[in-house]
Length: 487
Image 1 (cartoon, rainbow, N blue to C red):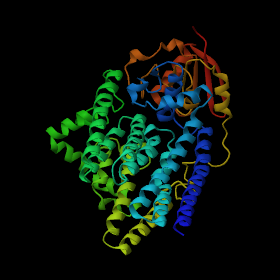
Image 2: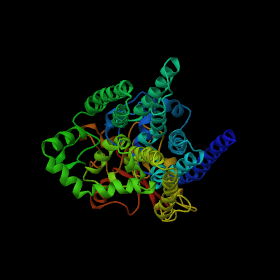
Image 3: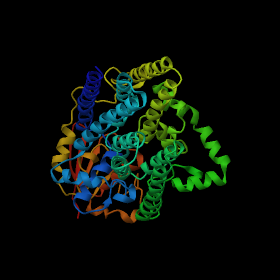
C-alpha cells in the first residue's frame, strides 16, 4: 500500500505539472505573439543569447556587455538552440517548464520532511497555485527564475543527507553541489541564497558541508558579482540609481547601511518591509515564520528588493521575487515539520491551511484561469490585429540597424544593433554612456506605434522627417515604419 500511495502521489504531481505547463505555456506564447512583451527584459535576454551565439558581447537594448549586465553563464547551454533557430517563445517555454517542474523538488522536500505523500502533494500543488509563480511566467524569461528548480533540488539534496559514511555520502554531496552550482551559474545573486543555505546547514550541525557551501558561494559572489560584473560594465551598473542615497550597488548599499543605520531603518519603514514579508508568506498560511533559519536563503534578496526606491522590486509580479518565494515555500515545509514534531493534528491543520491560502491567493490576485486577474489585461485573450507589427518585421532586413517601439524590440533582437526609440538620438533606458551608441546615421529603420510617443521623442521624429532623413512611411494597423533616405 505505501508503494501504491507513493506511485499515485508522484503521478498526480507530474499530472499537475504538465497541466500547468500546457495552460500557462499557451498563454505566454500567445502574449508574445500578440506583441505584448517588452524590450526590458525579454529583448535584453534574447539579444544576449543571439550575441553569444555569434561571438559578440555588447547588448544594445540595455547598453551593457552581456556579462556586464549580469553573470548569466548558463546562457551558453542555450546558445545551441539559437543556432537551431530558437528565440523568445522557446526561452519563455523553457521558463514555464522550469517554474512548473519546481513543484517536483518542493514535493520531494515535503515528502522527506513530513513523511506524508498527501502533504507532499499539497505543497507541490500549492507551488503551482502561488500567484507569484504565475506572474513569473507572465513576465517572460529571466535567469533567476530559471534557477528556481536547480536551487530547490540543491536544497533537497543538502537537507536530506543519508545516514552513515562512505561513497554514497560523497556521491550525495557531489550531486548537491552540482545542483547548487548550476543554480548560481544562472545569475550571480543566487550565490547569496546559497550562503544562507550554508549557514542553515551549520546551525543543523552540518558544519563541514555548510562551510563548503558558505565559503564557495561567498568566493563566487565576491569574484563574479562584486568584481567581474562591475569590471565588465565599467562605471555603469544594472542597479543604477535604484537605491537612492544608499548607493548604486548592493555592496555600496551594505556599506552605507552599516555606517548609517538610520538610513537603512528609514528605507525599511518607508517601503513597509513588514507588509512585503506578509505578501510573500500569506499564500503559505504564514507557516514560513516557524522556520526562520530557512528564511535565511531568501533574506539577502529580500533586503536587496525592499531597500530600493522603485516599488516594482517589491511587487509580487516580477522576477525579484523568485528567490524570496523559494525560501518561503521551503520554510513553510519546515514550519509544517516543526508543527508535526509537536502534534500530528497541528501539522495536518497547517498543511490544510497552506493549500487553502494558496487557493484563495490564486483566486483573489492570480493569473490562472480561475484567478481574478485572468481577464484584466495581463493575458491578451482573443484575436489581436498584429498585421502592422508583422508587416514592419518583414520590411526590416535581418541585419539592419533599427530603432523601434519597446514591444517590437523582442521580435527584432536577433541582430547586433537594435534600440528602443528614441535611442540613439536621445538616451533612454540605456545604462551606458552615449559613446556606446552607433552613429544615428546607421539606423536604417524606425518602427513607431502611433500615438505612443511623449513630447520629446515625438519632436525628434518630426525633426527627422522634416529634414528628410527618413521617409517612405508605411502605416498598417497603427504601426508605422520609416526608412532612412539620406546616407
